[in-house]
Amino acid sequence: MTPTFSGGHNIAMKLPKAQFDRTVAFYRDVLGMEVTHESGDAGGVAEGVAQSASVRFGPVTLWFDRVDNYAHADLWLELFTDDVDRATAHLAAHGVAVQDELEPLPSGMNAHWISNPVGIPHILRLPDDD
Image 1 (tube, rainbow, N blue to C red):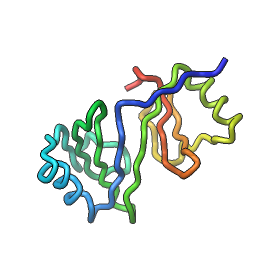
Image 2: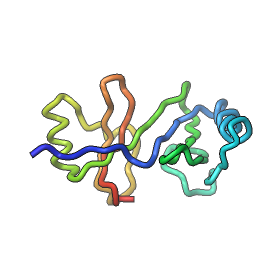
Image 3: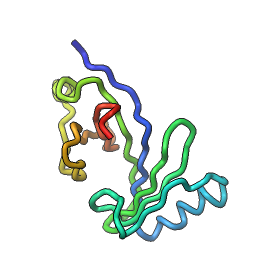
């Protein structure tokens, strides 16, 4: 039986340090979107992320993650499935390998990192595994 897949609620734009403030200001000041979450070095961000902010972007949350060792911006997507193990096996059968080395996952989260054919990372997880 083929697992189900659907887009998640989160999109992450991984940004170099030099582009972070300007990018957040674009969405906040130019587009007029409310920045709903900001955190920095004091905690509350994923490992490897120095600073984070987010805006509501239609039905999803668009996260801006400052990653100081990045040279260019990357877009990361969230992909929900009803069964992570079955989905991982299905993807492997189609030549899509798990890439959990991309970024550490939160402890205890049933998820894996994968990439689409052009290298855009996706977190593959259960919808209720926050």
